[in-house]
Image (tube, rainbow, N blue to C red; front, side):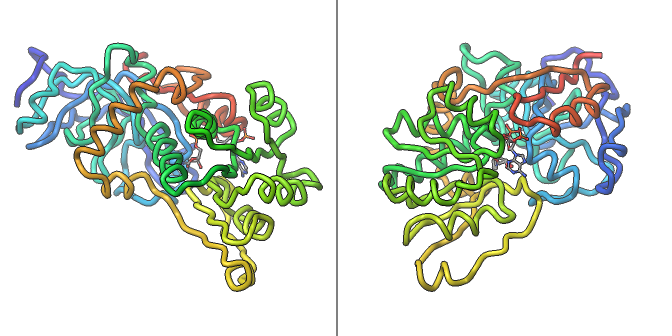
Length: 342
Ligand SMILES: NC(=O)c1ccc[n+]([C@@H]2O[C@H](COP(=O)([O-])OP(=O)(O)OC[C@H]3O[C@@H](n4cnc5c(N)ncnc54)[C@H](OP(=O)(O)O)[C@@H]3O)[C@@H](O)[C@H]2O)c1
């Protein structure tokens, strides 16, 4: 094993999930053995890791991947590569600051150290701080992929739900840059005002009694036949009923936590379509060149179109309180866990 450290510790502090039922009560800071990287893997000393909706889904056992318990949650983060288990790519990363993602099989990022595949790491360019780089992968890549899909399919306008989210803001800025018009759907009046203050022209509150009629009018007028939906539950059915003939709804989140009741007549008589998006699959479908190009682009836009608002940065010991705070008002910015801070 190649390492930058003279002596690595034998153990590390980590936030561990004990059960998928009542996860917040089942998250504990524990001392566990330091994981060691195998061939093609690296050991990252973690600097920061965000709490994302995908982490909340994982904690409840509802994410696309479940790991055997007990397990350290956390899908992304940032830190410094302190050791490599072998392989050219892994060895080349030793000593570098990286944004990193957890594997589907090992412990996650909410710990002092992470073992992951070298392919799950992106060396950070000098203009990206290690702290901010913690949220470099999940949302920026997703926003880039979705807006690129809209652009490549020659849409000139689109609808997005959960538009006050961190990802929603990225989609809005990227779409603006690409000359696409966005109809933003939020769920609270404060969010309507907030997005208008940020310069968004089309904002609708899904709890407003005129929501459907306004969405119908705007989507017809602007020719919006594409919707990115992060809410699910009743939302896709409402979008398909209301938007023009031939609309495609892409579900990429399940914030409502509910199944989607949809009137089948929208498929028969309006030729509406519904599909899903998962970053993990999208990345798998990209060739190496495309992945490298996208990685470079998201770093270049990271402090502008793809910036993330951070609300608080807390040590692992305060994670449960921070998770509760986050779920009460998710639009207020990301919470970063700082595993190195006691
Ligand atoms: N498919 C993929 O590969 C992929 C990748 C990245 C992200 N995502 C998804 O993208 C979405 C946004 O992620 P993010 O990190 O940007 O989120 P975020 O910044 O934490 O914000 C979440 C937003 O969703 C709103 N929200 C929460 N529950 C809702 C509900 N039941 N109905 C309507 N709105 C609701 C929140 O509003 P309040 O402030 O009112 O709570 C907030 O504006 C998530 O669903 C996430 O899972 C998917």
